[in-house]
Length: 145
View 1: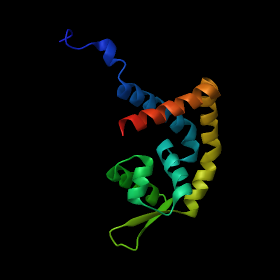
View 2 (view 1 turned 90 degrees about the horizontal axis):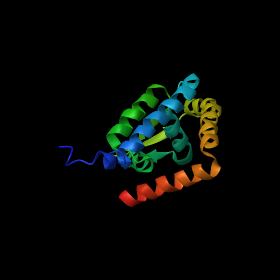
View 3 (view 1 turned 90 degrees about the vertical axis):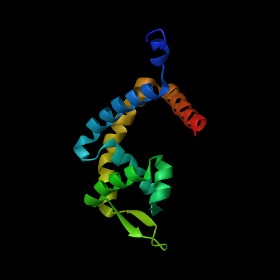
View 4 (view 1 turned 45 degrees about the horizontal axis):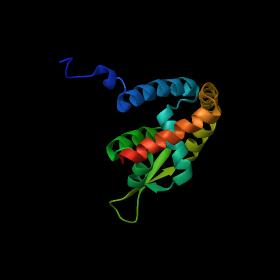
């Protein structure tokens, strides 16, 4: 079997390396955001909703690059916390997502914590490397879509 699989190449797997990095970064942000009660994924969703709400669930899923089922599950948690609400759209098959006052307040409280986490990452890599990383990640997404 080892003759068939080049483990040196497997260690270079873009998917495995990015997923591993994602888990480490998520834990890092979750730890710093913990006093706010928000997880990194919830913070990102609320920040996105601040820009695009009201928005349909389908459009939000496309923006966040997440499947609709996972998005609905994540939104349900935010709805239970009264951070977002949904309404039936003009077309009864469509649901729109809205930010609530409580959601805006939760985002405002988490913001300085997020800034701390973000600053630590940017300082560790340096501005230029960080900007390059963001450009390379965007290029990778574009290449596989």
